[in-house]
Image: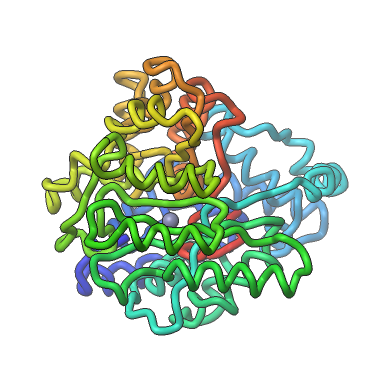
Length: 415
Ligand SMILES: [Zn+2]
């Protein structure tokens, strides 16, 4: 993800993000540095007001001040009650849970042993030059989304291996994670090389004494020497492979090798090597291409949607194609856009197109990942989140919707 904001915009943005109330869930739109967040809107202000009133009332009865109340399971339940009151009945929660700490705690306990695999995670190599994500973590902390991130100044070290290990495996409920990367036409600006991902996997699994970390190998169709590089990568025995059809996502302005998933002359040569090596899962970055991004990079637009997914899935029935970000176009854009579109047409770009593929092509090997889109829409416009989840479950099937967070970019755990 490249920075779409100027330094000046970022400088103006960060101080305005300071949130006075440490609520369990954020009550305004969370920014990444890819887009300029809207100021808190009317409905978000209403959620916040209702939540504060509940904290004073229910928390008061429990002898807790606001801050303490918000740290309890009852405070978390109150947050969802407040959102239901404003947005409609989206969350399975009762007012009794907000009023009765033991009841809220009971639910929290019942969920705490769930098996959680986060199939979309990142950290950056030691010699990285990419500073974008430091700003992102700072903004997310200041917005109140992930409070731990606001407690200390974020540095590039927070985006490296040691902190990754801590946040993913110690601070969150994640049991198994998949380490991913992103390629660049500039060798040094890959988040991690294929070898570095494999080395991280070995380190974590050795320390844990079990398979806690899986790893990707990145493939870059069209780049000079890409098939040899893929072959070398496959020898590292990755659990799955990943590619970016728009080519260089980090430096979109120089991206020279975008590609199509259904290109028989190019991409299919890569799938052939993967099948031979026993690979089953192919992850593809799609979406995250709001109209503002299209304006800057119109040449990449044709590679960002899912028009090339169906034919590839049909031609390669022994592979699964897992579409990252479920091709949701408006991550990094305004969710109000998506809501208006959904209310008008019943569809959301380009997630609805993805969800149509199984029926259109008669395939069952297409999956959707919820990295970024779940967390950002749940905060900013929960009706969009509900629409996205419903669309995906209906079109792909509930067992074809995968949990991924895109951490560490916005910290882990994600609320
Ligand atoms: Zn990612």
